[in-house]
Image (tube, rainbow, N blue to C red; front, side, top):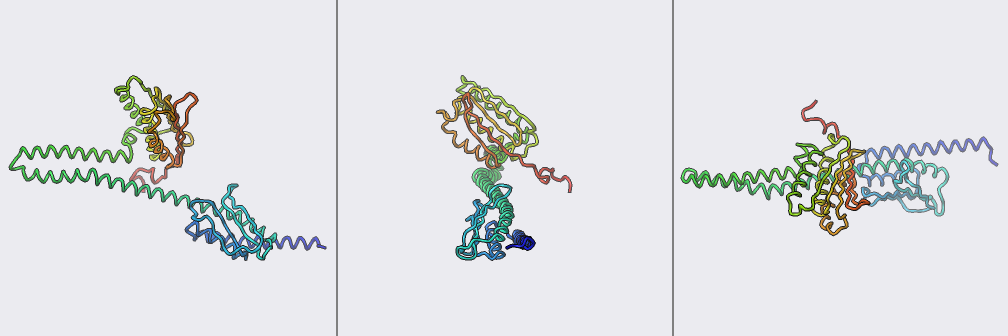
Length: 368
């Protein structure tokens, strides 16, 4: 027979003991988080910590995420009956914690289960934080990879195009210097030829600049630059062989499109230009409407009344559509292509807008 006062004492003792163990485990977990660099090392550290502090024969943590390598870490070997607890953060699954009893066929007692439930709650927040760290490192790796690929491309372009032209100009100047006093006519011909070569080199350098960032964006801004591109396409359509099928364009802009980050401007401009190229080449449309709307992010929409994406003229669009999807995905956005109820093709890109860091947005030389 249990005495009521004694039961209250044992219950309070159990609570104090559980709280003490929980505090010890969470404090040690926070300490290891501070000095653990890699996400997979954190998993290993967590299972070892839980096993050592609670004297459990077996601890397993599983998580599904590409940044975590194998996505699991375990310590020891299963002995008793298994207990699986979800690791969650703000209601979202972060992983799974699995432990076993200390003796064959034995399940963990109430005190152990209570401590483990609290540890799982804190462990979910730990894993969520570490997952964010893994995502950040992956994003940084992608940025560094893209930067190095761009540098390699520019190096190859300079080596294959501008480099030979400048080398030829150098040799030509040397030859012109030798014949200048003996044959002025030949020297003049050489100089004229070198002038053409120099103009060609300047054109190559400008082309390389345009691949980095369209000059029209700096000179005009996003909406005027797109309007200029539309005017060029419309002029070509009027003078082209297929001028019988006139294509009219409309451009609508909503919201503040002046203060967009440069990376969003470039992506939107490239997506619109590629979409309009597809409209002109493949759609057979008579009207095309471009809409730029600043909402939570930037919505870029291109609608035409042509044959539709599944039409016969849609063949050959694959590379352009893939390029548009990649540009949207690079910013963490989406691109959807469908057919409106009245036919044709609709392309909708949604590009998130991140705040510009002060150090980037501040003009050079402003402040200290």
